[in-house]
Image (cartoon, rainbow, N blue to C red):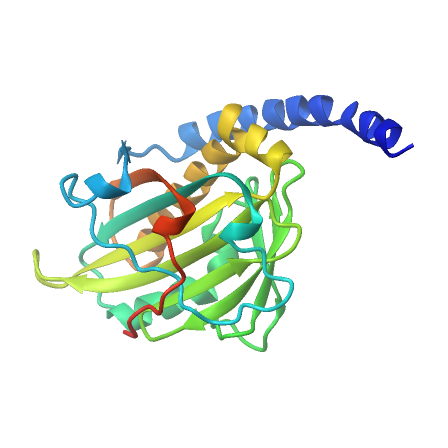
Length: 255
């Protein structure tokens, strides 16, 4: 009986993925035309990070994310470390003020056609520990995230049960010295697919990966415009496939 049920449910998986892929493709093409960008993508091993010029990672903190958290050890397939960062020059905001601007406009910065953030638990626009967000994503990929760490210059979200990924993502803003007054905004995630079906769509078909790329590139470029910067900045991207033991949950330095 259980075998028959699995087969019946499996009949709908492939058509659903194909339909989601077709819609995703149309949306991605539209986003590329509507928001052109220049980006550099690297696929490297963790051991090659320093040689490739990738700054050290800010790992997720070793905190209790809650019984419904969906962390990297709960996922399926390879553990992927992704970074999206942009240099913002010409803004009058400091690092802490820019991070607060990001938090207050989280739902506006992400392209609504691909991902929409809505706070479901929390009293104001800032990201405080324990706050939760509902994310409506293109295709059958809706999910929830919880703030598990929040500091002056960074905050971390952990995925919860039902999210298409298992892991965490950190948003941070840091001043850089050259040119003077420039801020680096970094979005960094370490995650695996929730299960084998999502791994197929994310990894093999590449649907989820492309949607993520469009979301975070657009996010960072909109943040730059919101901060009063003219022009479209270049977003740098890097991708690493890691063994699970290479990404322990250790405490991140406060900022």
